[in-house]
Length: 111
Image (tube, rainbow, N blue to C red; front, top):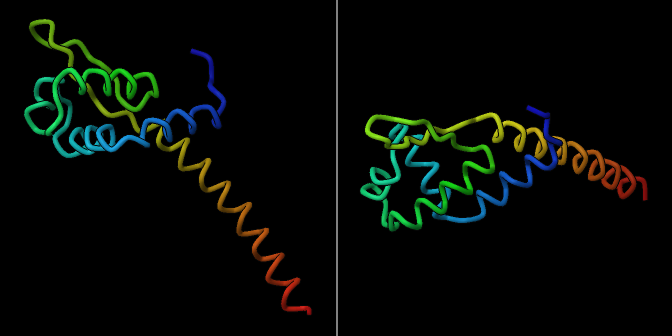
């Protein structure tokens, strides 16, 4: 599998996290472990059809993985690797901003 550009991975993660329903799905999977779309629909105030669409986007972003289960049911499990890439991306941005802000502060203090 080819290595994706960290910025592209971070963009997919941020796009996925922009929607409150997708954040709720990730939180439900984090709290309750792997689940089917039907099980998630029973836990959340979201229709099963909407959950299926959100899970497809979360799968595409790499935040969940679909695993075949019993009786052709698909269980969804969290994947933390893309989230770690997004965290590293944010940490790098924060370091860049910190450096710029420190330089600005030093400049202003000289005056």
